[in-house]
Image 1 (tube, one colour):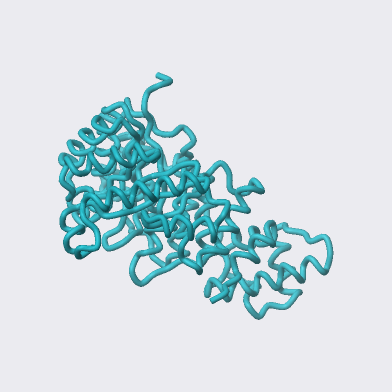
Image 2 (cartoon, one colour; image 1 turned 120 degrees about the vertical axis):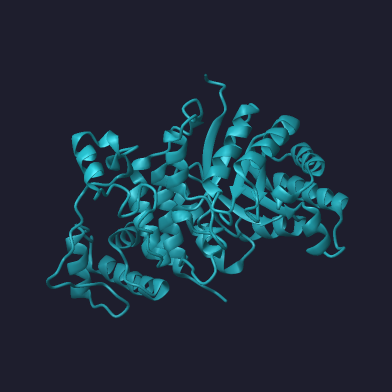
Length: 412
C-alpha cells in the first residue's frame, strides 16, 4: 500500500484562472487564494508568471511568506516557456523560486501553424531539453514539462518528447488537453500509453470546451495510476480558466472521493474538503463571478430539496438524496449580515474608523505608530483591489505588513 500511486492536486487558479478573459485578480487576492489553497491541503499552486514583470514583487513576497511559515507546506510553482532565456530571466527576477512548469507546443497543428517554421519537431525537443537542464543548473528542485496541445499530438511523438524531458531531468510531464477535445475514453487510453512508455508521473491539464473537464481529469488520473505512476490533476477554484474554464477544484475532489469505481484510488491525504466553502466564496467575490446555483457541493441548491418525494426522503435519511454531507465542505454555519451602522476601512479612512474596524476583528496594535502604518497599507490595499477588503484580507495585512507592502508595490 505504501508504494501505491496517488493523485495530487496542482491548482492553477493564479495562472490559468487569471487568464480568464475580461476578469482579473489583484496581487493581494492572488495571495489570499494561495493562503486558502494551503488551508485546503493542495500540493502546489501555480502561483504566477516569473518572467512577467508586474508579477515579480508578488511572487517574491509570496516566497518570503512561505519562508516565514505563513504559506507552508504548499509548494509555489511558476509557469514559463520552455526556453533557456525564460529560465534565466526567471531566476534573475525570482531567485528563490524552486518549482517550475516549462511549456512548449507539441502538436503538428501548432508546430506548423503557430511556430510558422521557427521550430520543427526535433528543435522543439532540443529547446525543451536545454531549458530543463538550465533550470536544474539554476537550482530548480522540481520541474514539470508541459506538452501544450498534447491531446492533438501524435502519440509516438508525445512519447519521444516525454522521454527526452525525463532524460534531461524533468520530474513529470503535463498532458495538456488545450482545446478540451478529449473524452474520458480517449484521454484514458492516451495517458496510460504515455505513462507506461515513459515511467514518470503524469500531470493532467484539461479544459471544459465540451463540458467534460472533470470527467477527463479523473480518467487521466486513473490511467496514470493504473500504469503505476502518480497523477497530478490541475484544478481551478470554481472552474475558472480560459474559454469554458478548467477543472473545478471541489468537483474533482468530490469525484475522487465519491465517484463510483474511485474507492481504490488514493487522493493526497492532506486535502481538507472542509476548506471548500471559504475558498469558493472568497474566489467568487475576488473574481466578481457568482457561484452557479447548481455548482456541485457549493451552489445554493447543492443541498436544497423542494419536491415532496425528495424532501420527505431527505428528512427521513439524508443519504436518500444526498451523496455527501454539507458539513464535509465547511457548510452549515449561519452567515451574519449587519443591517445597521457599518464602519468600513477604505482608501480615505481615518484612524478612528480604522481602529473601530480592527477592534471588531479583535486585532490590537502595540502602538499608535503601528496602527498608523497598517492604516496606510489598508488604504493602499483598497486602491490595489478596487473593492472593499474582506475580513481575512484586513487580518492578513495586520499580520504580515512587510509582505503586504511588497505585494502592493508596482514599478512600471
